[in-house]
Image (cartoon, rainbow, N blue to C red; front, side):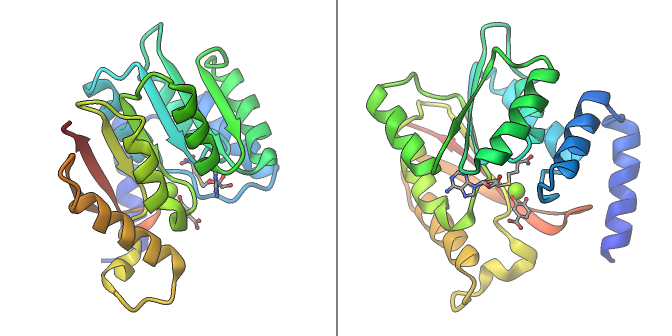
Length: 222
Ligand code: SAH
Ligand code: DHB
Ligand code: MG
């Protein structure tokens, strides 16, 4: 078992279920040209996000960590005509690339990008009293996950689905003494979520073109 085989199997899965797509291909190409890091979700994971958001009949989606808008476009595809997506990004350069990609994909009017530290944007939305979100994808800095979870709960309703990316980290997540702040952030997040009576959930380990990692899937029950 190795990364090369995982990638080959991912390619096979993509051939079957996630055919190459001009819009998403262009988004990745322009992200690369602009010098953004290639840390977007894999195609099969993007499709999973679209499916999960659809299964929950999501009309309002929140994304924390936009990068070039690749996962944003997948999520936006799940939305009904009156759907909306808010995506949070710290880096103004990333946000500019994402804006172009999202507009070109035809989701310009549905997607709002809020630029700045995600925790600030989340607090702003709580103060503004925005409608709760139906689906939340947490994928920004891993050190921030505990805060993002706590604030996201204030923007959720009964039945809101929360997905958090990169919580297994090639197995590093099980080391309580890890000196990696990202591991500590993820551990604190999983600790909070698993001890919170307002949510139920699990973590699924994954292998594929992005190596060995995993995602948390939570459902808000209050
Ligand atoms: N969801 C994207 C990948 C996101 S990568 C995709 O799959 O296509 C993580 C992003 O989070 C980066 O663009 C990074 O700039 C952003 N980020 C890092 N720290 C942040 C913060 N404090 N607030 C908001 N965004 C942040
Ligand atoms: C990184 C971030 C991600 O969200 C991801 O899926 C993979 C890698 C990173 O910061 O290196
Ligand atoms: Mg990620």
